[in-house]
Image (cartoon, rainbow, N blue to C red):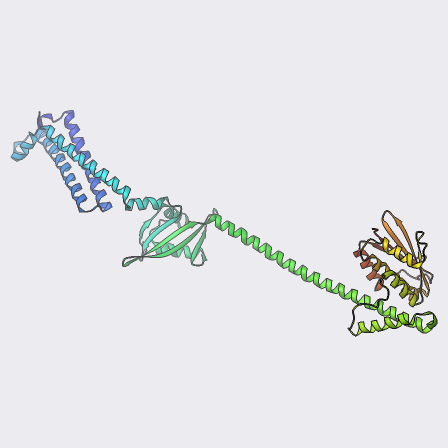
Length: 442
């Protein structure tokens, strides 16, 4: 087998030189891996020994090349160097193969170690995959560890690199919105980031960790809920105002109704008393007495309901009209059995539950007005039926109104009750007084 010096300049020579260069680079990288991963002294010694072996082969090849290309005996090569130059090239190739095998062993061992152990490189790559930004710095502000997301976020917000953790947190605090110790930053494009700072203690050293979480969607939902809550509060205020207004209106209406009812009852009692004084022989003294006593109880607050003698409201209304000297005539072709039958027939035809009470109030009101304004003594109640329901028409035999009748007091209260039952009322003053009430039938 030829010696190394004999193959100088051939393809084999250059192949050996290329292999030695690659081995030097590879063994150096393997040593750096061992140091970075902190594999321990044994792995580092093996890597250093392999590096020296690869480097020694490279030196021998370079010296041999120089010896051949510059053949000057005065250079003074040592005898062992001449022996190395004469060494068969196969030995040198075997040493290179051994160094390559050691390099492969170190590489495979390093990969297995990384697979089963947590290394700094794995930690860094894992942090770079996080969607959140993370940076860790010491108490002086020096950055010890930062992922790509935090670096990019710092450039977007501040326009510079992340080099000082303390300065970065102060910058965020000045321009962000405090959220119970956390800082909210809104970017111009609409993204929202929530920054949090935590204090970490490792042994005797303390570090500051800042995390940035993308809360764009969460913040959008919060803003939407706040907007809806504001609308609900405004609606609640408006509903409360309407409720208070409705309550006031209801109370005012009830008070007006109570006053109108009291006014009508008091007027009825006074008319009954006047009629009794002028026509004692034709007036039922018991009705006048009982009605007057009930009115006194109402004024004293001992009673709330008016005097009632008859169970049927229409019969009661006719009796009250008679007590003030007004005769009530009921006209209906279907009623031929006398006054009691007429009253029952009228009541049976009224659809609303309190329709008979409404018609009774109309009779009492018209009877009182006949005495006070028309100076009459008779009212006529006529009934007719069509597709729209029952039509009651009330007229009197007194003087016709001199002017247009303006509804107030009893008439106004009567209209409200009629319309509440679904009916309608019309008052005519010319050529004579006429009160028309239309109500539904059963």
